[in-house]
Image 1 (cartoon, rainbow, N blue to C red):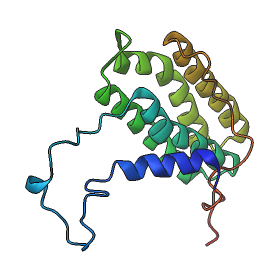
Image 2 (cartoon, rainbow, N blue to C red):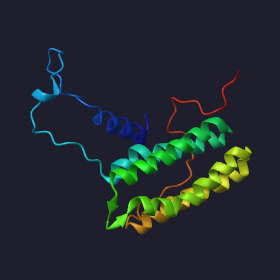
Image 3 (spheres, rainbow, N blue to C red):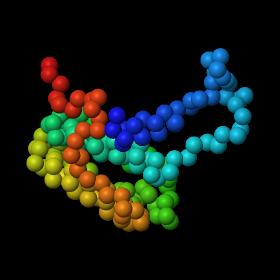
Length: 168
């Protein structure tokens, strides 16, 4: 399994309620009886980017590359929703309003991707996706994370998923 996919899966599993909290008998422990020694999980910005944003960014490109416009539209919606969750989960990051920053840097490029998807235009999609990727990198620079450089995927990290349009 590619490292990025493995990290995403492990991170997602850590978010599941009660994971690892059942005794060896297999009987779940009621929440009220769990010790308070475990703090609530508060994902970092890096966690959210790795778990919610980066996989959607990759899947969006893979769907567009295969001209699977229905799936590309779905992933675009999921990416927009993930950006919204980042803004709600970490409203202020490095003294900046994350919802406002994300909106300012991604709205135009996300809209251009959506227009390309709806037009079923692969060349327009590729150009809009490049702009979206540049928007991601601009955000990273604005937050002092210029070392995090996102690019157009050159392969498929999701080898267990088909991105071509399903045959009917």
